[in-house]
Length: 279
Image 1 (cartoon, rainbow, N blue to C red):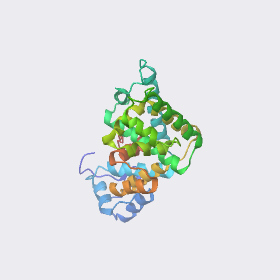
Image 2: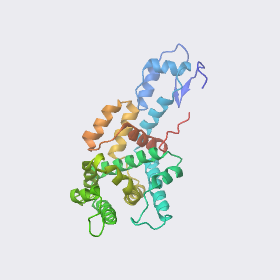
Image 3: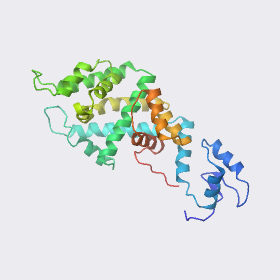
Image 4: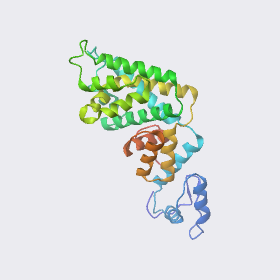
């Protein structure tokens, strides 16, 4: 939009004419699920605010109102299934699956950088965890435990003398009770003792429970997960990031970072890790 060029509506919401009262139009924005000031309405009406951030907030409110996570569930499912496809094309490896280049190949398939794909995996993990915390699914927990046990077996040498210290620690700390205890054990190991290496080598195995989780959600037409609701509400209401991260930690028991929540919000609103909004 050309700056300074006036407009009479924005995404279906009328803005009125120049010098007309702004309050009634501010109310209509609020009724759409977001709160903005009359001065912002004036800037949009006058063409001095392109409105893209407002549009993103309106989109978040719309997904929240419709209770529809299908964009995100389908996107995350496609990532997990693509990971399984990449894995099938690999040559046999001593650890069953080759982790070197796995995330890079997956990122390339979705036109993302490797770091963006790693953050997307973090969002998928957090989503699965928040759902399991809220509505424990014993069959998914069992499926995950089988996958994690296979991973640990593949990375354990027969005599256990040359097994890496992080893997030995994980075997000792994990209760084999499902999703949450596995990731808690990895977090307890800590970065300096090799938790990041576990995360990177586990990714090629992790796509199986993730594909199972999102496949089930798509089949059941599941509602928004607890993480979905927290993320969308924060986006729609323009809440401070630090407060949202604290909410995710306090209410969902998940430690994450701003960039992961941004990717999760984009997945919910646009079905991609990167925002695709264009007015």
